[in-house]
Image 1 (cartoon, rainbow, N blue to C red):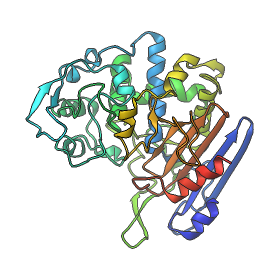
Image 2 (cartoon, rainbow, N blue to C red):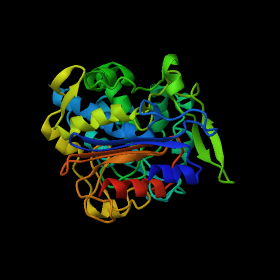
Image 3 (cartoon, one colour):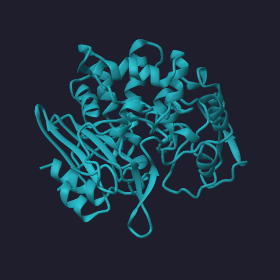
Length: 378
């Protein structure tokens, strides 16, 4: 199936995994580069974009279990920039037509993407434009985003699009969570993720930069141009070759199929890790259930057609709430990345599906992704 898509072009290659328990199907197809000179391998390191979101959500839950924060805590304690937010009077109102927020933004609001900031289905709304221009939301560009304090200062000047808890809005909640983790712990987000998740799980190739000795394992990153050919977006020694000023909790990580599989296995094992640090609990079963349970109302799901396509949302990832298409399995949790990636778990079947490519994804699931899900659901 993967080979057919690669042969049709313009996709240079793909690495994919489907696992049910100890049964694993792994395929590496095509080349790392458009010229076809270097094959992709299971050790290839990909820019995983929004597959960062579930990882950051899990990190937040470790702090909840440590008693450092609570889900119903106001984030203003650590993020004073969000202590007294203003909200546009209506979603279509100009930026200076605002009212005070009726309540504080909580940790739970950020995890469920209902803080009031983020992308709706309509990008033309006045309160959406500053998310692109001031905060550099959108496709990952790690070296072009301001450091966290300056970024939060810019965020504080942008009114909320909805009252806290009212609507599901995409993306920015995970970036704010990354800053929250750093401020609660007094450590950088890369340091905290490495200590609490990557090292215990043996995720040796996951982080916000690729060391010089591993850059030969990083494929170039492309988008499709107007002629159907490939346009280079980022080279192996490009934006992920140094630690970024703003480690993005929404889309900044690089990883491999084996590393993300280790994270997925931990979720399927109710929070227990079987990595280099031995068998140990990183999360409680209750925390994993909260992450992988839909927290949205039906109107909130239905209003988010551009992103969710009828799915619900847990912490850091979508949750299938009903069987809409052949590949939808109720209870499936995970997400897709704009860099051409996808990863999900299905607790009811104990399955993991991971697809990693180096070709920028479109706004809706691609034919490749739909075919991959069909294959995985057989």
